[in-house]
Image 1 (tube, rainbow, N blue to C red):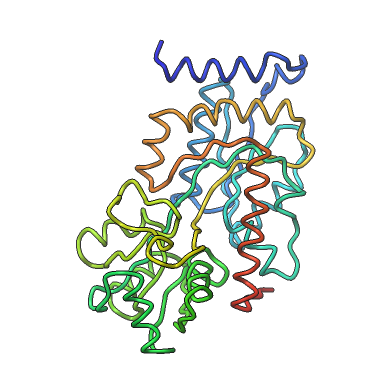
Image 2: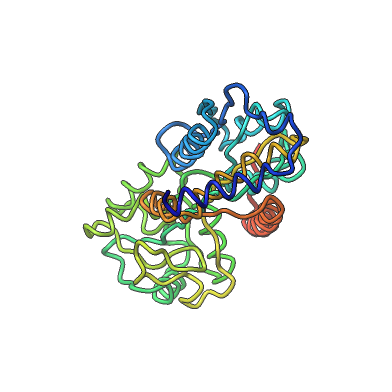
Length: 322
């Protein structure tokens, strides 16, 4: 028996030792894994990984169910309003911690309306510039932007998305003036940055590493406080001199509020055991993500911290969506 198998077995034994009979029988029928974004993206990859872990653990199908729209809010509304009986497991994203600050009416509360399971993965973003821009560091970029107020532009994947919020955070901490150009996705945003239509952007690292390595984009820094293992030579924005800068995308596992803790534990144990295993960490790193695996209480606290952080950025940038 491998150390990975032993770890998973120990986690399951610990989770089930004191469970009542009905919880020990869970799951007895297929469970939906609600993914609030389309197939193929980072959230879908994480969601399907979670579904696969749980299917293999319990021998019952955990079926991926993509419910895209409104930056993930449509799928999460479905999740919040689903029966709290363990019949649905959901993948929450950073967008849901941003949403309360930018939407006048939101049909759910990311803290109160969910039973939090664990932070599954964090996806650092990379600050990149067009190769022709005469900068090598964040300090260079800030100095150039201040010498050209309102003349440089940055791409995002849309109003209120993580790339938009990250650049507005940078603006708030450095007092630079760069113009926002929103796109409908990362692919067209990156293409226009490569062509020089826009000069800079934050994008998930996995989406731009190939362009950095072939010289079509120049990497300046990584958005998270810690460096990204896939490009350890790249400094963080904070260590480049912008104190307090820390952010990026993330995915976590939640269930509808009111789901019995015994059932939450049945989801938590095998998912966290896999996330903490060398194989799980390596699989996520290949997809541009850093493994999570915290407790339900820690994940709930993390979301509250994220919501407060993005609320400050939204207020600074005066971002309000209908």
